[in-house]
Length: 141
Image 1 (spheres, rainbow, N blue to C red):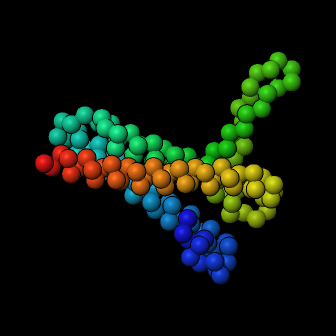
Image 2 (cartoon, rainbow, N blue to C red; image 1 turned 90 degrees about the horizontal axis):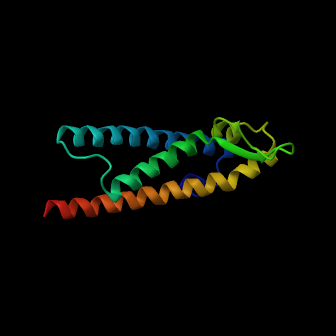
């Protein structure tokens, strides 16, 4: 998020690449951390996903993964029988934002969703870290 604020004078495409690269690196680190947590719990015979920290962390990683994949699901009702048709319009969100040839109306429609879920993943990550530190301080006593 701060890439766009800190480097306002740089080219937009470069900022998008930096934004995507940092988020991809953060996601890889999160996946490695999840694997380490599960391995640690399994080795010590501690149950997995037993605390608020675990659930918030898992939720943050899932939202973050969905944000990276950004599968935009469009729900539209069919006129004939009223059934709901689910179509996946775009498989990868970074394609939508990195390629300027994409229709501007599609990008502008996706941007609020991208921003909302990006902020949600960030807030969940911060909350997870704070709750994890609190749990650690309680368990150490």
